[in-house]
Structures are given as structure tokens and as C-alpha cells.
Image 1 (cartoon, rainbow, N blue to C red):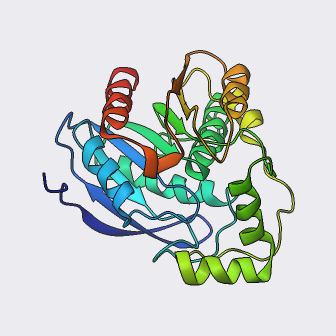
Image 2: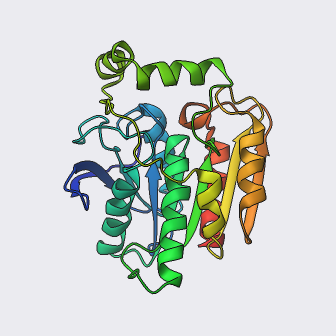
Length: 262
């Protein structure tokens, strides 16, 4: 089956970073938009993200995008901090092109950003500081970390080498087209397990594999335990990490959940 056609669009963030995005029209409900956020060193142009976009477009229109420092987007990656501004631009675009309901689906780093963004938006809405443009109706986080600086697995030690060492950042730039900011966080952004507290009453789905080689299951449980209702936790047998391991069946189940809960 050919992948669904998509239409390129260039977005601008609140801090004036150029973000490459694409809109794949819905083959399902016309009023539902799904913002798809990739993991660290990923891209909307890579085949796993394109497959996920195609499947999700059966449930709603999909706005996929490259985080800052990734692919053809501008700027440098801050590995989960300022990326909430990139997601904000994508959500606002989904609203601007007419979607009445908007859900965010994020993988790995994108899942952490989805949690942080949703928590900030919900808190701002309760305080009367947020308009409708950036509002979201449901959140799905897949293979996401619950806390920062985790080095408990070999893949995550390699990720930290790529982030923290000049040679690692060069390797990420050359091999993955990912440009990483050299200076660290100041201040340190809220961790996902802290931000998830604020998402309620927006529906939240946490998906994690029991074969994830990056983040063990305690990350998923920490997120779920901290979150308010309504929330669901899916522990997927045999599922590895993020986009590359996501099967069409899992993505379809996520799509059905989004339709039912947004």
C-alpha cells in the first residue's frame, strides 16, 4: 500500500526558529488532527515516521514535524527543553488549518516533550493564560523517559556521549543530521514525571515496551503513578523502543484510542 500523500509546510516558533513540517490529510474523521513528534535524532522523512503517519492518517489528519536541530529544521537541539516551542507551533498550525480536535502523539524524546507541553498548556488554561490555538484534547506518549540524565542502559550512555562530548555531537551531525547545542540546560527544565501531574483532566495514554533497551518499565510506571485521571498505561510485550519498533497494529490501536478520547 502506498504511503499517504503529504504537503510540506514551514513553521516558525515563538523564538523564531524555522521548523519543517508536513500535513497529511485525514482518511478518517475530518475534524481530528494528530500532531506527531519523533524521537531524538529522528525525522518526519525517515521511513518509520512515514509509516506511522500513514497509519494514523486513517484516524485523523497528521501534522508531522522535525524538532529544531533535526533534518531541515533550523536551530540546535536542546534535547527536550525548547522543543516544547516546536510542538506549540505544530499544534497551532493544526488548529489554523481547521482541526477542531487536536491530539499529540510523541515517541521517546517527542513523548517527553508531549508530556511537558501538555502539562504547561493545561496549567496555563486553568490559570486563564492560554487561548484555544495551542490547546490539545488528548496526549499519547510512547517509549518516553520519566526523568532526565538517565544512564542506566548502554544505549542511553551512548546518547549522553553524543550530547555531552564534542566528538559525539560531530558524529550526530554527520551521521544523523542532528545538530546539538553544546551548552547544557540552564535552568534544568521540569522532568516529565513532574510535568505529567498537570495534564489532568486531558486524557493521557502512556505506552511502553517490556523490551525497551533505552528506558526500562519503571519510567512508564513513574509517569503513570504521577499522572492524574483520566489515564491509561499499556505495557506492550516484546515491544522495543520508539518509532522503529512500532508495529502497524500498535499504531492502529493508538489511533483508535485517540479517536475515542479526544
